[in-house]
Image (tube, rainbow, N blue to C red; front, side, top):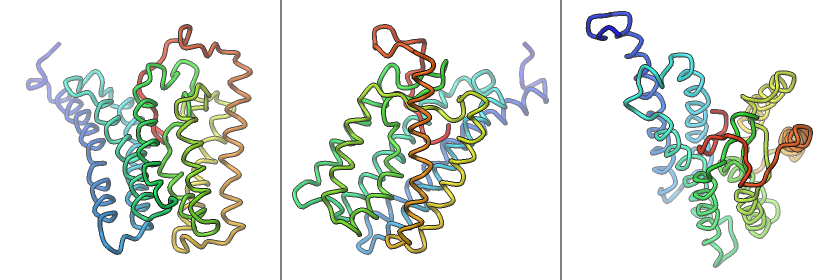
Length: 263
């Protein structure tokens, strides 16, 4: 192979590939701004969610860009997946759960609930079969604590702290449970379009609720729950139809990376 310093085309390709790594790492900026808001005495959860939305956008585009620009081949000295995993845990688990704790959305004396969820996510991220890339599934609840935190604020406003605690306990349990949820980007082609389009509409609904958070119209909240319900039902149906073996000792070839929202 020619030295990249002597081949301007190869040099540009490598520079672009390393630029994708920089894009992935740039997620630390909105993540830091989200944490900065959390530690303020007048913390506004809406601003935290805006910054987390920015990190989700970066996470959604860096994977396709990495494949498009052959990052693993042209910028292999940096492991982009490690950067991605670290930022995913920070922005999909740690920061959202810290927000739940900071806003006192849990019953008095049960603040440690967020630590349980954080621990469950650590095991979820580290599980050897966190993502079945061959068949397009996540193992367990894929640590979408940013979304869970959003609904936690709504639950707390309407029904108080106990429903929030119950939701977090259930999701923490599901994080380490061998259930399988479809990975939209790797779903069968006949399902991929509606799964990705539905995720986009769902995200727009959540954004639409931000200006009135935590008191959006109840009908809007109910509409926003349609996609998660359909997504869960489709996941169970597709997994059943594929009749894959779920026992850890006989898992199909998988990736060890715990997935993010749309990587």
